[in-house]
Image (cartoon, rainbow, N blue to C red):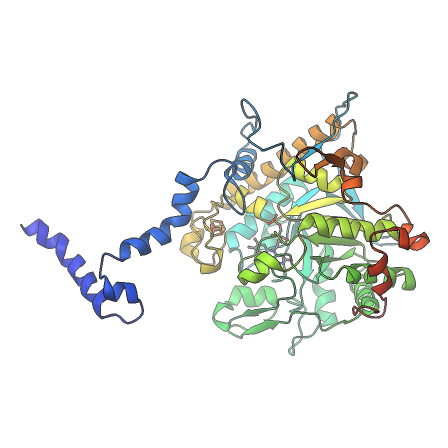
Length: 503
Ligand SMILES: Cc1cc2nc3c(=O)[nH]c(=O)nc-3n(C[C@H](O)[C@H](O)[C@H](O)COP(=O)(O)O)c2cc1C
Ligand code: SF4
């Protein structure tokens, strides 16, 4: 009797609370009982992920993709039994064309030299690096483990637009310092770019390259607001702002507004940093704008050292649903457009091309490299290597694995030394798998892959090489015969002096 009373009293109190609270109609109309629906909704992502989904379902990443990263991070064999789970008869299935004269590449760690001709401090980049994620979006332990893993494995760690934090420095990995429109780390009191602050930080030898972020695939053209209550002393230190002060990142940069001005800003950053490579990161939007940047390079002789194309399928800590789903080109279309722009204008030898957007398997990396990428970056791939379970709570500060949270008690579970090893393992084992598929195509370096190595199913009966499927532009064709390309109209619209279309 007493036990029943002990069990029933809290339930009765909750029922009474439901009856008189004013926020939830269902709770008022069906006290207590309607909470079953609420609990089911809260647990839905977990129930779906662990009970309902098959290996090839689940989004943004399916179970098979995640399991691949987990195994590589734990140094466990990634071989699988019996056969492919994929629907290989349906578009847009793709495969790599292998060679009868397959080879065994000796190189375990292929590198890419970054720095347009004349760059004083060129950088030798790995083909797989950690994509931009700010301190603040990720907690201190996650940042330090990523940086430490990068240091152990000899690849780079992009700071994200939130500046260089003490945890990036503690980890010791090579850094690419990202500058967003908020200029965190080199921000004047009015939010504009401060050259002296930039030069001071950029001279740090740990910083190998600078990346000007024009946009991000998950939310291109959307600025950000960092509410004052999130500006802790550590975040304020990394971003060079006042503790507790609300900070705005506008949708566009205040330092330039035309393609030529952007190149002049890049050249200025290169000078101020003592000759480090400076690149741009963007998701492709208006196609003529990418071509306009190329026209500006041709007209001025100025160069960006590298371009990172981010896909619309890319991740973020938080973004409006419409931007996540429907703004910005998916990676494949963005990569092909940018490759066509650089190849068609003869700039591809001077400007390195990188990309990001679900680049976590050796196949996706090889296919991107065949289509023109010199290297790839991944953000969520490295989050999985840290133990992310895709619970989709990154925006709530309640990350169960201590990665996307500033809550110190949640971060406690993430042991930096252990996870740094997993970060290193994931990168090393993925690059090793890449070299195996590169060898199968008859090449010894990923840079030898061409669009002819990628077969793309366009219908159930027909498959073309990527070259034909995407109608790729030939070297110099935009200069010699633009009207013979599928970019003829956009090429006419592109202007070096404005991002606006010419007609
Ligand atoms: C938690 C999180 C934070 C991110 N923060 C930034 C950022 O500060 N700057 C940026 O350019 N991209 C940012 N991104 C985007 C990634 O760098 C990357 O471009 C995108 O997620 C695609 O890569 P992925 O599919 O491998 O995750 C962030 C992504 C995530 C998941
Ligand atoms: S486990 Fe953490 S980092 Fe991963 S999706 Fe969930 S909240 Fe985001």
